[in-house]
Amino acid sequence: MQLKQYWPLLTTILIISALFIAKAWLSDTQPSPTQNSKINGPAIILFRGDKSPNCQMIDQLVSEAEQRYGHQITFRQFDWSADNPLIAQYKVRFLPTVLFIDGTGKEIARSVGESSAVQAKLKNTLAHLDKLLLQ
Image (cartoon, rainbow, N blue to C red; front, side, top):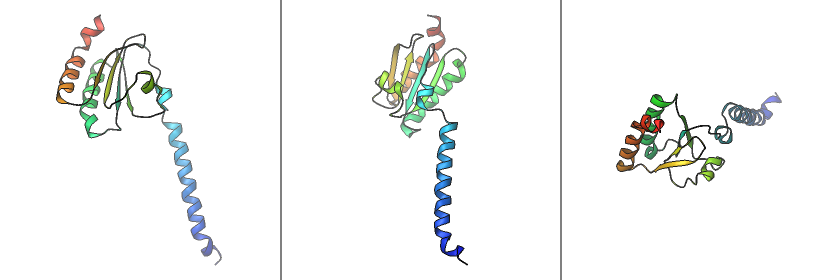
């Protein structure tokens, strides 16, 4: 009978415990931005706004290029995060931003925004990555 009076407290404790366990589990299973921020060799990096509608077309173009060239170039896609050191390193100010990085980690090109002109230029550049790889 006395358990009924403690039921709300026990339920609250159980829910809070479950939230802490879920948070700990997620942080262990998902790499942090700093773990993913090591870039070795040529790379294409997409910084996006958490799959925002404005970023989806650019995301699709980069994903298509990754399917074609992923064995030759490192592709990374990051949702914006203040914890990601690459955002400060490459001075990313607007989303989406696509960076083209050479083998030394130096930025050689950048595409910013999602306008149709930006999409066309990015699509053309990504379609000709094989020529860029030969240089």
